[in-house]
Image (cartoon, rainbow, N blue to C red; front, top):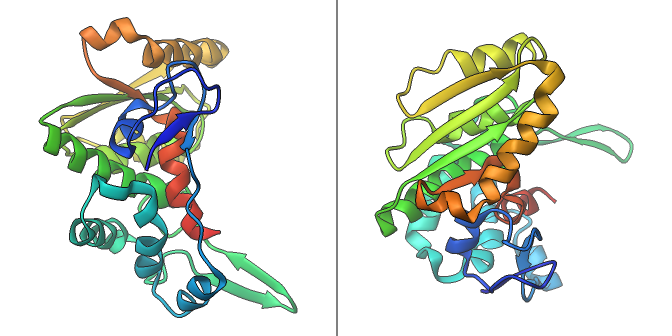
Length: 235
């Protein structure tokens, strides 16, 4: 499986490289060069599968040779073992032709957990295989920061640095971020008036090839291709 930039001026990459690249160097998003498809019979065959089994079937063609079947199944099992509902994202029947998909059963109660809990483990798997280390950077005014921290905390191949606007996140999100004691997690505050500028500066840093000489880094808000793969499971 090859991935190409939506702007067409970046090299084709394998999934492992896309995972660690974030945005393409030309500013585009990485998407599959050929989209995997499922037949009607294949969809029907997934009807009675568990969430983890469905996730495996859907994710498998997107990551191709990046991970073996046993490793992928084990990673999915570990990812969702800390969700508080065994259906992971239960679909609740509200009434006549009305249903609600619940995406708040992860460790930080945010829908971001669905993808980021897997991504943190996938980062670790790929980085250990390559004997590499990355620094994840991000600026958040919502639930991305706490979900990203929870996904990356305690992982020896990852450091994570998150900024948020002081006084402009909920008490729950602030406590989720500020009470983590793992050594690989760092947190900073920005004046709310300058938050947009700080976020822009992190985007520039994450895309700056020159900084690769100092440290491998990844903007957590810019992993659209990889995160999108895992959200497909819920559609």
